[in-house]
Amino acid sequence: MTKPTTISVLAETLRKQSSLSEKKIAKVVAAYKPFPTKHNQVLVRKGDIAKYLYFVEKGYLRVFVTDASGNQFTRFLIEGGMEGTAFPSFISQKISSASVQCVGKAEVLRISYDELQKLYQAVPEFERLYRKVIEMAYVSSIHRIETLISMNSRERYLQLLKEKPKWFQQLPANVIAEYLGITKETLSRLKSAK
Image 1 (cartoon, rainbow, N blue to C red):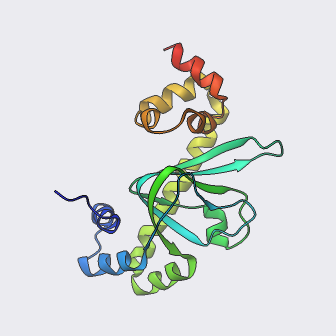
Image 2 (image 1 turned 120 degrees about the vertical axis):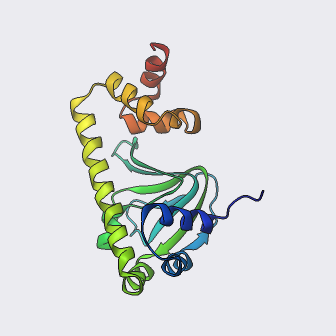
């Protein structure tokens, strides 16, 4: 059995998440281009404009911010079968306050902002599907903010362990710690206290 290609993973994701016809799925898939990445490659840098939306076939991307002291805080993780970027920058086409980076090696497709606008015209149903992606990203962001505000580090850790157990096997400890808003040492203590 051969490994599915990135493009077939995108097509399969579209089939699961939409009622697009095969012809329209083919149009959407054709608009996304394979983009070879390197280990831990930065795709969007803070201070640049996010020009591309990425579909992750395999691996992870992280959206992170860096404070004045150089500390990084992972704002969002984009896993296989999902798409994302530094959305505020991509949507507004203004400078990004966040960076987007591969976590290790990731296999991705990308579509430029301009090509996405053309795709909306060619396949209006895809624009509605994309709106759902943005709405879910918004809901996820609100959920993240609420957990960071209302839960202590142990509660956040236990919730993430319950919701995303595979992250603990597939992601480096520092990325999980940054996502939880804690230090790597605190994460180690929480793991030991189970």
